[in-house]
Amino acid sequence: MALERTRATEPILADTSVVVVGGGFGGLSAACYLAQAGADVELVEKNEQLGGRASLLETDGFRFDMGPSWYLMPDVFERFFDQFDRDVTEYYTLDQLDPHYRIFFKDGDQVDITPDREQVIETFESYEQGAGDALREYLETSEQHYSVAMENFVYEDRPRLRDWVDRDVMSAAPIGFQLLGTMDDYVAGYFDHPKLQQIMQYTLVFLGGAPKNTPALYNMMSHVDFNMGVWYPEGGIAGVVDAISDLASELGVTTTLDTEISEITRQRDSFRLEAVDGERFHPDIVVSDADYAHTEQDLLSSPERQYDAEYWDERTYAPSAFLMYLGVEGDVEPLAHHTLVLPTDWDYHFEQIFDDPAWPDDPAYYLCVPSKTDDTVAPDGHSALFVLVPVAAGLRDTADIREEYRDFVLRDIATNTGVNLHDRIVCEEIFSIEDFASAYNSWNGTALGPAHTLRQTALFRPPHRSDAVDGLYFAGGYTTPGIGMPMCLISGEHAANAVIEDSID
Image (cartoon, rainbow, N blue to C red; front, side):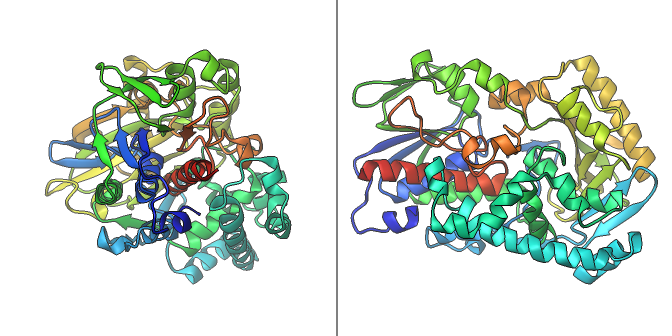
């Protein structure tokens, strides 16, 4: 582990310069670990703020987290800060949400998932006889899977096939076999009621997948949801970005913002990185937290690429998103901090994302109202909320389409939650496919990267080490362990470990 190596009395990477390209969670994490190992680290970010997709929008007295908004897996964040002899509470506090989230089904039904396990069990039982006991069993198994998977397949990077042939993996083989099934079949083995199946599968949206293409191993996310809780960090997700940025500064990382790298070239003893504004960097090592496909296809010359354009075209990508950031006059009482609006049959929406891409005409979507928990994100007498509709990456995205879809979604919200927003909006921003591509150089405007399908999980994701360029490494959601803030934090650790291991060799 990087922790064991970098606490040696003599810094392993002393006299080594590193440029980290991209300041998302993966890049920030890698920068921290490399600085702790003694490297001279500079983080170069394209945009005017750190966080990558976890950016912040401030306008007209409102504040919005533009990307991730669910704080899950608090154990990962605690472990991260602990590796630098810090406590997460030194940087921000957490409030547990109650309810964790609210679900409006489009047939008029409504469900709250709360921190009260017995209440949730009673709710499940009310839908299906025996479902309460099934939930107990499901969550017990999910907890076991989480513990084994995190220890053996998440915190431990296994980039090569031979890395999977050892005693630890063999002892965890029953968990690994879960990769061979899909989430829809796995959940159906516990629950017959379609609404209960949806409740157990909604977290797949955060993995960029659908029940029919996501490995059953990800049942462990139910442990994250039901057992570990859903939290709100002080200052929102932007507060978490600030905390890790502060830690990086404390460790000696320097940061250069508003500087887009346009070319990465390997020279004899170092790299040359050229920025759009003409600035140049000459580090010994490069870690790219920019989108992997963008780095390979746009920043590297053809001989220095591991994959061609066809490889990236053939990946199954997580959805993009249609996002509306709304400052609203008055309260939005029927909504919780986290609210899901789900059609009673959501297969059609997933088909319009993965099988026959189109703007969804009966979408499943998510609303976040941080002003329910944090009164600093909106002026007095107002609410801050955003709406996220998962849509297929690569769809045609024009101003006319956005305007028409905006009105459609507002009508759908009013119909299915009773909250009429249309005449109360005092400020508004829309962010969608073309914005993901331009702001984050994301492939076809995907919001997350490659989905967690069976063929794109674990060692089947692109590696942390470049096979084509010595000294070039990768972090972020394209790599292992995958999508999401906690996973990207761990990806930065894996990338830093790879640098450290190669420097020792």
